[in-house]
Image (tube, rainbow, N blue to C red; front, side, top):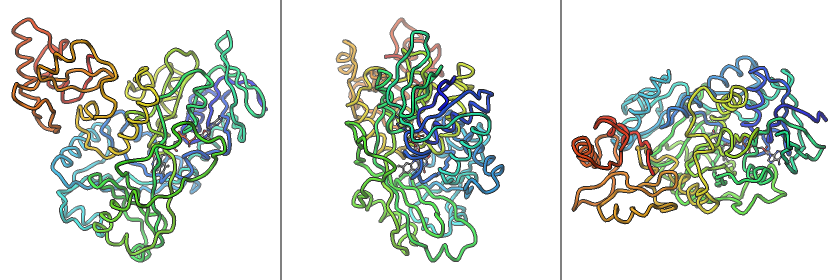
Length: 507
Ligand SMILES: Cc1cc2nc3c(=O)[nH]c(=O)nc-3n(C[C@H](O)[C@H](O)[C@H](O)COP(=O)(O)OP(=O)(O)OC[C@H]3O[C@@H](n4cnc5c(N)ncnc54)[C@H](O)[C@@H]3O)c2cc1C
């Protein structure tokens, strides 16, 4: 076995393999990946493989856009070796707020160069004839959405990385890690010791085992997630093409064609964290026990909307662990307090994000920074407050809110694990009717509601109930000395922009 390398990636899921591939694309060929079992053996092999561009974050949209175009390119170059289906996808809106959210994302998509468009119910019916549009206001259409077989794309990147000179060692778990005085790493694996200049922790739901070997803990845990695969659906057997994907965020599920059947994946409230005290040592390429009761209600609503779902029996239920961080975004980049150590993990949408994550990870390593400011993915966005208890509670909350409307400030005002860090003035601020949120663990005033009104933000994509109160505060500190909740902002306009974009400026 090769025993020295410039970069050693730990974990052969889509994130690790994509990082390896992108390093070789940037000209670094003395690079190595070690995998405990087989490539894709963690969460990657059983993912549904859905590939949305949709995101409320511009950076994540760009990252997903990169993945999807990379996968399309690799499919072309692999002449059928990669199973990628660009079926297009509709998203349904039951409320005006959901339509507002789609408008915002469509505008962001335009900036990113995507072909997202708003659609009315007639167009929805045209795009998805099996849909009952009763109760819908309209939706969104992305012609370039689709799905991929996660194993074929991971293998395609792995074989390209190998061809460029990278080394992949399978059946080789990392057992211990020690940093040498010269900053290099001594990594002990089942097959021998590897001397590595840089290490990348891409160990998926075992990333905290690897982190512990280095001497720290990552704010991530796993949640159970299930999807149901149906038998052949007679309606689909008649077609010679694949129907688009469908997502109903208000009911909280995705639906796509799989062969001549369907995959239905709900995100249910009351999600179940998995193996929070550590993944059992013997857990390998396995699934978890199905529990249809948890997702039954969502499935029944889906069947009312798309009758053909109910015309086929259930072939399989896939229940697997997905990693979640406290804010639902992955951890990509260096870890505070360590040299030559990066993480690329914590993905709940690792298939659609894996390609872009590997691209940015390789840029972090080779150039010292990625081409975009990826603060919202940087592991250093969390502090010590994001301990084990915090992480499990927030991850459970994020799972239940997977399809929550992407309002500014909504996340900061969610109830789980508030008051992690408080300043002495907080009580007095609350007595003055402060509407509080949690920012980097700090419980702080976001704005002050007028006397006699509830200290609660009514979220909206339009001017919310905060608008007049924030405007008044800005007017006052423009005209008189004072301490605003937006102290560094010179004008009313920028303060309002800050509020609507959810910037978290001050503890
Ligand atoms: C039911 C289900 C459906 C999903 N559907 C989608 C979807 O439609 N779209 C989407 O984008 N995402 C989806 N996901 C999420 C997706 O599967 C994951 O986000 C993604 O696979 C994570 O990839 P990864 O490389 O980070 O981790 P993993 O695939 O888990 O890879 C980590 C690897 O590290 C290895 N490893 C662990 N410890 C060590 C060690 N000590 N030494 C060496 N190697 C080690 C493991 O064996 C494993 O192979 C789904 C997940 C589930 C469970």
